[in-house]
Image 1 (cartoon, rainbow, N blue to C red):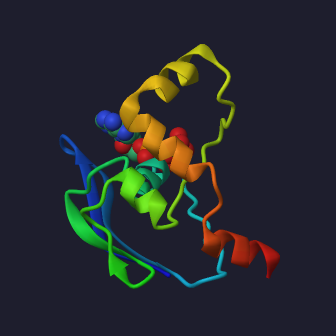
Image 2 (image 1 turned 30 degrees about the vertical axis):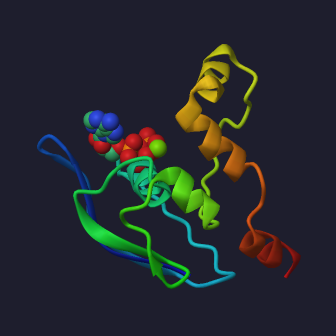
Length: 121
Ligand SMILES: Nc1ncnc2c1ncn2[C@@H]1O[C@H](COP(=O)(O)OP(=O)(O)OP(=O)(O)O)[C@@H](O)[C@H]1O
Ligand SMILES: [Mg+2]
């Protein structure tokens, strides 16, 4: 379902993610654990398309999605959620108003077909 090879993201001299390989099968749950600053959020942002990777490829449902934007990925069923999901604060309201964010959030607000399948399984 999800196949990641050699994913790297550097912020200056710091490599937040460094040649990450991982594979997730359909219906499988994979936990990414690590101490503060280990690079978990960076990895999730790379997978969702919120951060461009320096190197590496991401395949999802048999397709290379490395060059796709976050809205394009979400339309294919690859969506991320956040620890703070409330959309009612002033700062998240301003994010909703941005035309670029609107496409992303509106497309992620529906469960993709694969997610409904795995939830009912
Ligand atoms: N936009 C950024 N610019 C510069 N450095 C960043 C940026 N985002 C993350 N970093 C750095 O990359 C490293 C990994 O950060 P990241 O937020 O991915 O870690 P994390 O595992 O999610 O940590 P936490 O458990 O605290 O959420 C940290 O050293 C962090 O300071
Ligand atoms: Mg984090």
